[in-house]
Length: 292
Image (cartoon, rainbow, N blue to C red):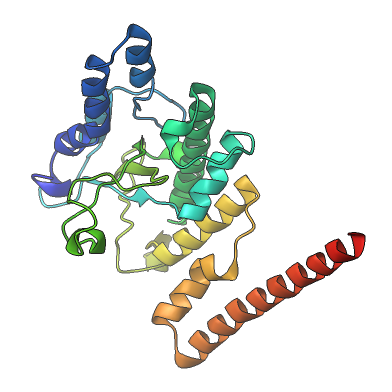
């Protein structure tokens, strides 16, 4: 947006308020006062590692002032997005609703919607704990998300773009909302840590390297694949999610980027799991037939 991540975060922060602006318009057109209040209650605030409702002004100020010793051409912040699969979102929504299945967030009551957002915020904080740890700078004080300067914003909608196949085939228009659960989390994280002593880049070419200057050793780099794998593991533990082989990052990465042998091994694991599931279903069916 505008100057990119080498200038102020202001344009990005304002852009991430787009869903709230749409909800505000809908609230102003609401047929009743109760409906107006209900619509406004769906608006999302920025949140930090230990705060749930942060103003846009504070987000801009905290990100834009945390730039000690950064040059004009240096990135001042990064903006990763935490995205979920349809199955993952279905799983989280089922927890939030106490087992009830919903097609989108509008089918949740206010209590369910609140729990759903709490779960997304909680997971996002774990993701940022993993982010901090992935720099391997604990000896320098970077131990968790608390040591970062970051803010995040939950969005519940995604829109079709011109290059989406649904738009190209005439089944949807660019700008139309995508159906189903589409929740995701935008993060704005400063290039510098809380102390402004450490310069942190998740897009560094080096994955994990120890350098020595004089008698001092220090660690540099960030392994993005490792971060994804850590986040996947954290999701499964936090939400007690039984991840299928085909959903695993390691399997998908092997299928896309692996050697011939790695691709064969990944396909074998997927096939074996499917066969085991089919066999289990057949056994359950036989048991039901015997009972009948």
